[in-house]
Image (cartoon, rainbow, N blue to C red; front, top):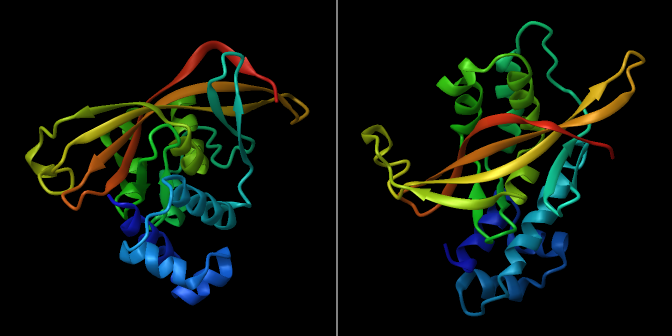
Length: 233
């Protein structure tokens, strides 16, 4: 998707007019008009900067951060356990939580791909065949990873393309699928309720490439604890 369209959709996702968006971001109205019309083309990093600003403002209350491990690989650290479930996860609550992202646009730092959040993500994430098979720590990990969807997209790496093989996705994934690796960490609490360490998990983002040309996050799969790995922050 071209930069002009991306910038226009980022603005429209806020519900602001060009004048309001200009006042909010500090970008001159004339510049926005030229960018959206394609008369001028800003550097590739501009849509990412705008997306990051909007992301921070909308989701700043989340207790999430990004760190690097000893090898320099990024990990999204989730500092709260929002979905505890002693026996089972209340996936309806996870689905409701995920609805806050619908309409948002996030960027993968590695390749500058813009990833959209569509209305199907909450139900797919919380009710897919894969999710229903999860138990114990893996189910808890996926449920709580919902808190860090923006950052998990941001740090995603190693994108791999797959052709669409199912007729039911003939339109919503007409241009195929992409899978990206991502990592996140969840806190482990001691008897006194203080955080002792963080367990690290890996997962794969499943992204559908729609007939419109947009790429949408569809689900997070292959969630697995990295054996023997934990971190302190």
